Length: 239
Ligand code: UDP
Image (cartoon, rainbow, N blue to C red; front, side, top):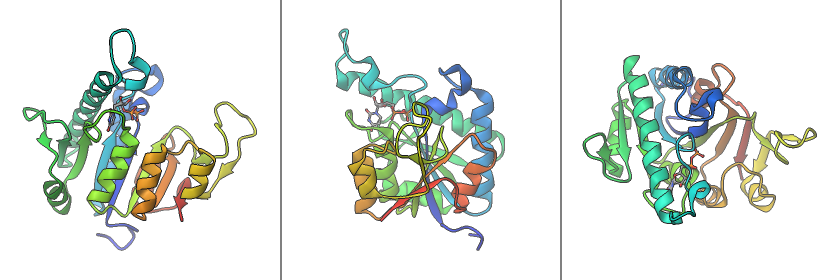
């Protein structure tokens, strides 16, 4: 690990939606390649990078329940959707020579390894980027919670959430022009004011395990790399 990196091991959360680019559905190759390049720079600088990716660009359980599809079934479909994003990210990393492994919470053993905590840690120690698929493996959870859970399990020193906005705001900046940017907030403030950083389950897990959460925009060049290396980008959520 190079001394200019703040952390040895970090968790990056990317929403599935972000990978769709402007089209809003599926995968935008240029976005996927850029994410891979930025992750690669940090990984080559010695940061152990774990990634959880969402699935909203293909399927989101809570939007699809009803019409004969119960919530649990819809959520399982959502978890399967995340795996497609994992494979796409892995391919992009591989294309630029960065070793990576996909580990899924639901076994799909022809395409990925099953999630085994110790194995995930070993991959990271060997310099492989580890991409966690299928969320927590349980319906009624989110990929933010999966990111917080896996971060705690692998002893990640920070959870870095790449979003569409610059960080934490007191209200939704896409809806309110006067939304105020908050550079630093506590876990408690996020919970009390429902600050839309991550859901309460995810935030609570981070708080209980003292994992700081960085929230930053993934649409500025170099920000993912900077965040992974520990440069202060966006907002910080901690005690
Ligand atoms: N999901 C789930 N359990 C998990 C993680 C995800 O059931 O532990 C399902 C849920 O239906 C969710 C979908 O997978 O809507 C995709 O994840 P998410 O909405 O968090 O993705 P993002 O919005 O980050 O793309």
